[in-house]
Image: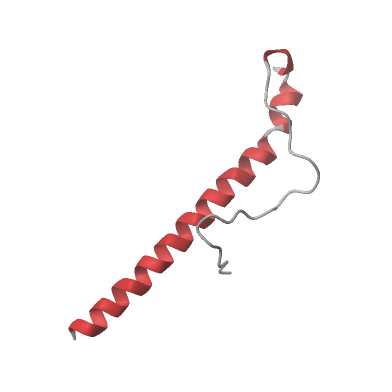
Length: 69
């Protein structure tokens, strides 16, 4: 499956409000594990941006190779 996203576009994958930032008082195991979905969404957005940039580079390389032939 290929997703087309713009360079500064984020994909909303969670529903509801963002989780609050971790504070010293919320260092329990439950508080730390509840922040994992938000961190996963951030990583997912970064990987999708990388994928989009690499796809654009591949298309440019193919065009250059076609011109050279």
